[in-house]
Length: 259
Image (cartoon, rainbow, N blue to C red; front, side):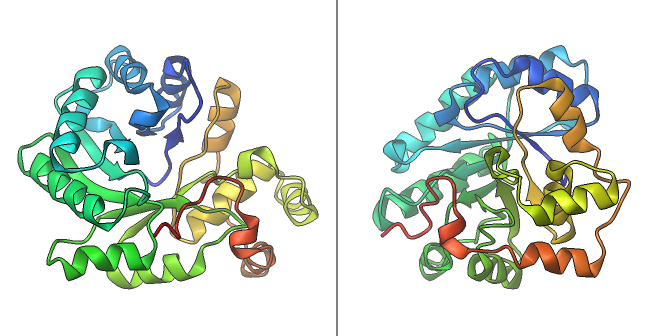
């Protein structure tokens, strides 16, 4: 899995952004059924002239479609829209459907994976409690948990649990939806001759997360990828760590406490 990806949430014409990303070196695109642009991601993959096997594509199933049979149908519908034979990763988008349907959906994803329609399976917006349900049911644990994760909402209990279990943590909204005017970030941007978005992405990478910055603007897609030519020192990482406000710092739905 490439350690930096392009998010396409609320990008209703995402093919240009995907093509720009692939042109400047991204090999990871994160979509979802809820985003209604799986077809556009598929078109970008076809138009890029890059081999399908070189591009890591994720999609997700939204909670109103949960349940065993509905999940199998949704995966097939996603593939039909995407226009390729498989997804590299497919996630349960949230746990809002309740325990019974969460587990049915997970079993369906396992079967879709075994049928070759998905390479790997995971979850999103899951707490440790949700993942422990999977273990208690005697099923394999997810490869990935994708959560809202940025300097102001660091989800430390979930991150620590996932690390203990060997689950990769993907970070959505790593740019705080553009709310990057905090003095700590702006001062570090000046220090490193970078912008605040690049500082936030670099912080995420250095913590071992897989950030998924979103932009529809090709120039921002490029700049968000220019984060591998510098490293934040320990003092500066600690300064960003200190910005954490826990759940109060969330800026999206963040349904990690779903019953």
